[in-house]
Image 1 (cartoon, rainbow, N blue to C red):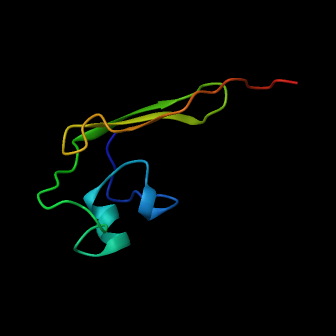
Image 2 (cartoon, rainbow, N blue to C red):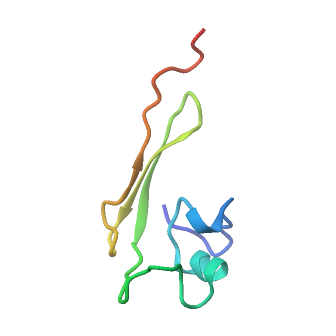
Length: 81
């Protein structure tokens, strides 16, 4: 996935899709604090949703300085009683 210009994450400081426009809206032209000099944004992100719950269970950066970074969540039970 790639963020469209209209992408407005619920929280700009920790959006699921890392994007320079989102970072600039949230942090200004300098980007987030601690962003290393020469940082390269990824080309896209691999995103996986769990069909049963609709929860995002994986985000992985493709390309850029953070290639391979992201998170994965494991759903151990859904609709358990």
